[in-house]
Amino acid sequence: MLSKKASCDSHGQDSSYFLGWEEYEKNPYDQVKNPTGIIQMGLAENQLSLDLVESWLASNPDAAGLKTNGESIFRDLALFQDYHGLPDFKKVLVEMMDKMRGNKVKLDADNLVLTAGATSANETLMFCLADPGEAILLPTPYYPGFDRDLKWRTGAEIVPIQCTSSNGFKITAAALEEAYERAQKLNLKVKGVLFTNPSNPLGTTMTVAELDHIIDFVAKNHIHIISDEVYAGTVFDTTSFVSIIEALMQRKLENTEMWNRVHVVYSLSKDFGLPGFRIGMIYSNNPAVVSAATKMSSFGLISSQTQYLLSQMLSDNKFTTKYLSENKKRLMKRKEMLVSELKNFGFACLESNAGLFCWVDMRHLLRANTFESEKELWEKVVCVVGLNISPGASCHCIEPGWFRMCFANMSEETLRVAMHRIKIGHRATMVKPVKYSPKWVRLGLSTRSLIIIFRSLVLFLIVSKCHFV
View 1: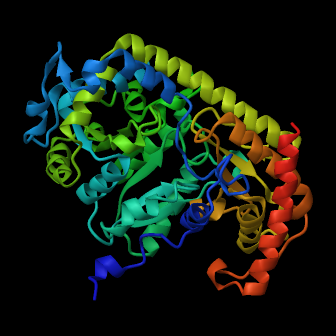
View 2 (view 1 turned 90 degrees about the vertical axis):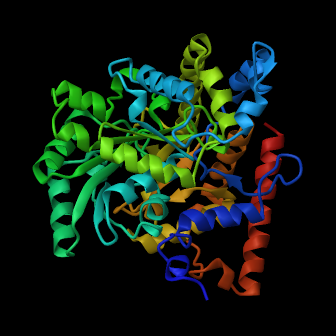
């Protein structure tokens, strides 16, 4: 018998976002070993610039070997370290955050709390700001993992701020008010607004007007802002990204009550492609939040060895300048490749300028304007075409037919295979709807067999086509 917390269903594991991952893990694509397997396009991971990191490591063996001036510091790092984190590491992190924001802000290392990734950072902030049963407002569409990160262990609730394609899914003052009123009707006390900037899954940066709407709304209701800025270093056009802290400074709100109710989440997972290192952080000007979050961080610390290695790398200004510039160029090139190919097949994408993904409009392929039809289409894309993409419903989009496609977690060759599959799959399977049962695991043997046979034939054509390119 498990505890109520362990057995509750608010984790979100039954979301199509996670179900797609399960299907991928059963049959992962490999160019040589499994060329008909499922290609993972549901993972927002940046693999495009890891060679730059590897080159730095090869040129700096002391850092990787845990040495300073040729002398080992292994014993120092192996012993217990205070959960406040290594001062040198925190110093280079805030300097890096300043740099990514065009040095328009000046952050203080004393206001930084280290966490084991952004997942831990967001959950920790929820523990600090909201009691069980209280709510946070979150614009849609949003990252599917937030259902787990913000709700599962904290007991907090999410009330969506409903955004639409009519204005590019931008946040409006009216949408904020509507969400707040809906929370009140549900007897939920609203404690803040959380958003990702740049947006996941949209791949867009927030406008100054949107940030002003949020600041005005939060100031009026005396609540908090959590700005998740984990994609700050992926912005192709650096002039278009405005951090929430910069937005406050533009309005001269430093040293006000509002200044102490704004909190920023960041990590090295997306910009530097290091999700396995589990480097996350909270930046807050609120001493009480910093103190509480620091205490909670003891449940998810970053190893001293990791902090030392990355402090050496990030303090190399020549390397970080080159990396950030080259990484943006590579991301833009890859994004343009995906958008161009999709356009050739009749698919439109939301205009974007950041992130590791595109928000793709596939509404014209729906049997009907319903989420049931979206699910049917998504199942065909995963099970028949062999691409794991994230459906809009998993991101709580209120319009059926939008999908998130990731482009930076694979080689260019694999992306070309994926595009060939879309091209052939669009002709062979996407045009006419195929009915599936709600749960793949409940499919009858004969139905599943037919799907496997049909998919094998389609993929045989795809692989054959790729070999002739």
